[in-house]
Length: 537
Ligand code: PEP
Ligand code: MG
Image (cartoon, rainbow, N blue to C red; front, side):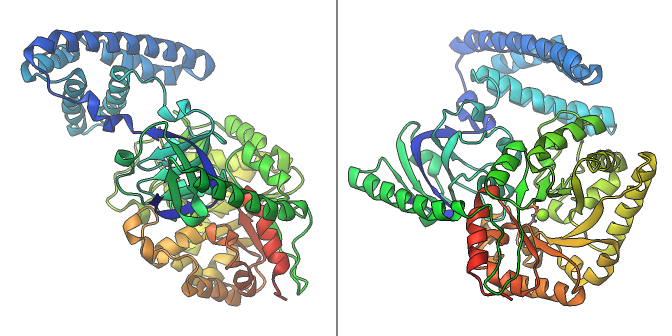
C-alpha cells in the first residue's frame, strides 16, 4: 500500500509502466576495465552511425515538410556528430579514463558545451544548447531507446515516474495511462492541471517510488483517497471495483443533465465553460455540456515545436482546436510562457527566480513578434468564432495598455473593423488590488487562482515542500475575489484555476461575485450539478 497526495482525482488500475528520464539512466554511465574498451568503442561507433542516419532523414523531412532553415539545424547536428576531432576526443576519453561510451560522451560534450558557452556570442551559445541536445540523443541511442519513452507506454498502463514536466506531457497521449503515481509533483503544478484535464487519476509525493515498484506489476490506484495498492489481493480488488461502480452511477446522473444550463436554487445562471489545450479537449468539453471555452491555453502548440508557428500555422491550429465549439464564446489566452514552461526554440533568459521573472505578458512584451503573430491569428480567427482574448500574468494596467496598443496595430494591419474583447487574468495580488485601473482596459476579468495562490502565499506551485502553504481554497483568495467584485461591480468575473471545479468552493465563489466558471472538460457535469444544488441568489 502506497500513499501520497491527490493531484487529480479518480480511480484506475493496470500494469505499471516506469518512466525514467534517459539522462538519469545510470546504467549508461559506468567504469570499465582495459579489456572492454574495444566493446565501448564499437557501441559508440554504432550509436553515432545510427544517429547520423536519423539526423539525415530528419533534415530531409524537415526540409520538404517544414522549412529549409530549420533543417539547417539538423544538418549542423550531423556535422557535429561527424566532426573528427570531437569523435577522437570521446574515443580518447574511453581509452584513457576507462569509462563507458555514455560517460565519455557526457564528459566530452559537456566540455565543448562549456567552451561554446564561455564565448559570449549568440551563435556560440546556441551551439552549446545543440551539444546538450546531441548528448541526450547519443545517450538514448547507446541505451537503445528511440523517440520519447512515453510514446511507448502500452495502453491501459499505470504510469510511474519521478515527476512530469510540461514537455513530457506533450507526449502523454490521452487514454494511454489509466492512472499515474509520481515521486514529486505539487498541487498547483502544470502537470497537475494536465492530469485533471485529461481525467488522469494522479497521486504524488511518494518518495522512493521508482525503487519500490517494478515494471509490469499490477496496481490499483485510488486517487480520491490518495492511495495505491501494488499487486492487490482479490478482496482488495473487489472493494476497488465496487467503488468504481458507485462513482460511475453518481457521474451518470450528472452527465444526463450536463447539456442543461446550471441555475442556482436562487435563480442565478452560471455558465460553466471548459479549459482546453487541443481539439480532443474541446470535443470532450462539448460532449460534456460546456457553455463555451473559458480558457484555451496555447502553450501546447508552442512547446511541441522546434520553431515558432507562422500566423497561418497558428490560425490553423486554433481553428482545429476550437471547431467543435463554433458558435459558443471562446476565451483564448495569449501564450503564457516562462517559469516552468520553456520554449524549445528561444534561448530563454536564465533567471534565478523564473516565477517572478519574465513570464506571461512580460515575456511577450519582450518578444513583440511572438505577440504580433498571436494577435494577427486571433483577429483572423474572430471572423468565424466569438473570440475573447485573455492576457496572462497581468500585474498593472500598463500591461493591458501595451496589449491594447498592440491589438490596435494588429487590427490596422489586418484591415479589420471589429476588435475581439480583451480581458485580464487576475493572477497576482497586485492585479487584484489594481482591478479598478486594469478594468478601464478590459471587458472581463478571469481569476487564475493557481497563480493567484502561488503569488499570494509566496509558495512555488511546482515545489512540493511548500505545498502546505499552497491553499487555493483559503479565505484570503475569496477575499481578493470579493474585493475585486466590490471595486468593479459590473465587470463579468470568471474563475479558470483549479479552484473553479471544487465543490466546496462553488457557492462561495458565486457569493463573491463570480459570474462564470471554467474547468477541466470532464468536470463540467459535476460542477453544473453543484451549481444547481447551491442556494446563491
Ligand atoms: C491559473 O494560474 O490559475 C491559470 C488558470 O493559469 P495556468 O494554470 O495555466 O498558469
Ligand atoms: Mg496562471
